[in-house]
Length: 151
Image 1: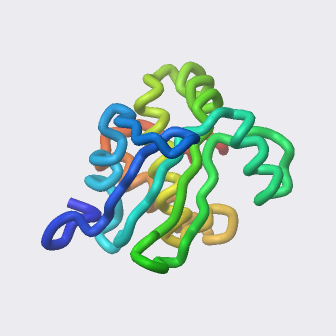
Image 2: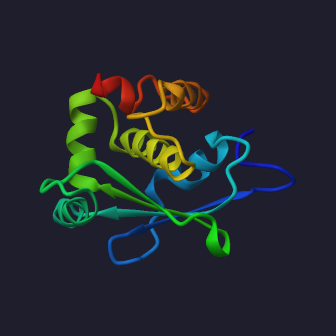
């Protein structure tokens, strides 16, 4: 399955906002399993407080609000694909609104963030990212993705 070629080519680490490892209901293994076959390198996922996400969003995107997910590509330097920040409070609220579990929402957000790390941009790619996200989320057992919900 995706993310694997002669072993796991994609490495996923999940931590809290202070860098302490977190299990997050199998998020790392799920993301490795659904990742596109060409995904290579290490991805660090930080589960952060909404206030931390608000600061990150303001600093890097110029928006003074907490968003659900931000991606910070590293360009593959040193085998690092990049970092994904997920706001836990936003994720919990979105999970409730979507009628599914928090763990499922983390998967939705992590997949979306990973695709951004891989260079996809749903704002400018004519639907390419949306099509790939839909295919991968179905492979991973997700009924709806972030892009569909935003429409």
